[in-house]
Length: 205
Image (cartoon, rainbow, N blue to C red):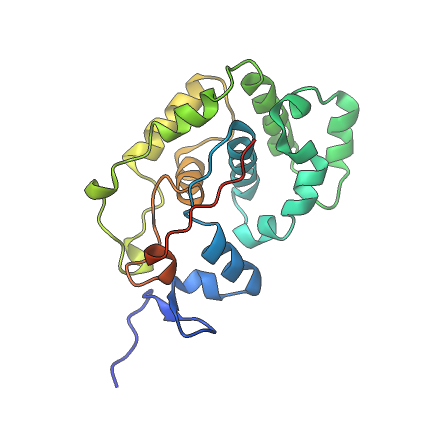
């Protein structure tokens, strides 16, 4: 019997192969199968993902995932117009909320980003982010976790453009995590069932 390849897809509870990280917790299993890598469109939906990826910086994604509903409640469903109207009282409320990540710089960045995006035209954030999606034909299919990049030329370019337009906490690593989560790239492993079974799922604004 051959030894398993480090970082290769592994069988889940149903016997189907999945990316190893998707099998570490039940929360990850559902997120991996139903959301990660599925196309997400809509300004508010993408603002939510961008904000949560920023909050994740330096932390495990599971920390954010398990608090996502609390984040949504705290940030008015991540509706850009609503968050842009938050006051100093709202800011203090957020910084006192144990259900989210009470990082002052990340909270301030989220509020500042909403105020910037509120000035954009409807659909502008969606169009901008998706304009950096690389051609799937030009990307090698990862076979093991070690084949998956943390930063790409496209994420560097997206990060640079977002920063140029006044957004904060949008470094190239955060930008690439956004691209992976929102389906701009498909980084499910070659043998992963989520790669071969395409069921686009998007949460629109």
